[in-house]
Image (cartoon, rainbow, N blue to C red):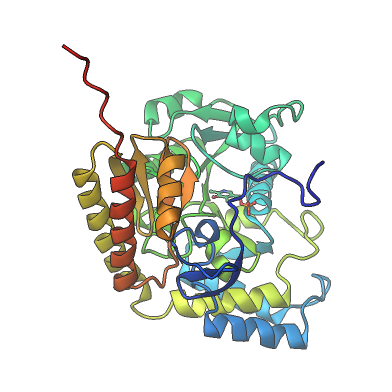
Length: 398
Ligand SMILES: *Cc1c(COP(=O)(O)O)cnc(C)c1O
């Protein structure tokens, strides 16, 4: 018989009762070092005092009023995001897929309003992940996710990641823009080359296209800059954000330049829950931490320590690991043995991680992770690796 909770996930048989910082405590008394952070989402860890206080205070005052009224918490959040980024204006919503949908609508509408109604197609990349709505399945373009869900939503073309010639070849008279994750998360923790991101910017300017960044996973401090594209020294025209933006409270956002944003006029796009006082209180508390002087530089410093530690583990266990990849605190170990086995061995040692495509195990610890916790995680990785070394093939008898 089907479970009451729809079985769309292969869940580990673990249930957590509470968390504290980077640690999660299971109902059976075991504790785990959480280097998955709920898929790069609980960026302030668990039970963060300022975050939980902000949520509790706001919940007691007013949680939801709808976007028919002014929401001061949302105005404050948007102003802070505008101040800290390339963006001139922000649309608040509830999830990554919803942010991406809105971003594509914005790109299409901006082309339409500026004399190019024929430009509606968006070029995406192989190995991408943009969410599970019908249109984002097509933007993702992964056959496994699309199977059985009817005709694809038209308007998305796919080219190999990090390949400028292929990208330029795919541009046609109907192309409206480009959509890229600066670091592919689900696809296997693969960063775009910084030069590739710069070349995308130039190409968009050359052809009159809009550059859209999906920073749902790699944004909000995850790579040691507020947003991952900053490493390339370029800016997108529009960007989606979600996962870590409110420290684990559900929220998404679209950040856009005025030339893109101004075409979504009153009534052209909407959301009931998006930007409610409760979610915005959580996001503002999150930004207090991430934007505090020195915080991002310290994420970068700790991330480099973690990278060096993982590189040493790869060198020590070539039978188990092929390489370390990623950026900041979004790192992956490409495995030689099946990543599911490695991940299980990590869990057995008390370390939670997330699988990713291309046989990678992904690490996305809370951004507040300490050096001591990184050292502890590395010790667990090493112990687990010992258990994952394939036993040698039996020597044939002479
Ligand atoms: C998780 C993710 C999404 C989808 O976000 P949801 O909140 O699950 O809809 C989109 N893009 C990227 C890069 C993601 O990592």
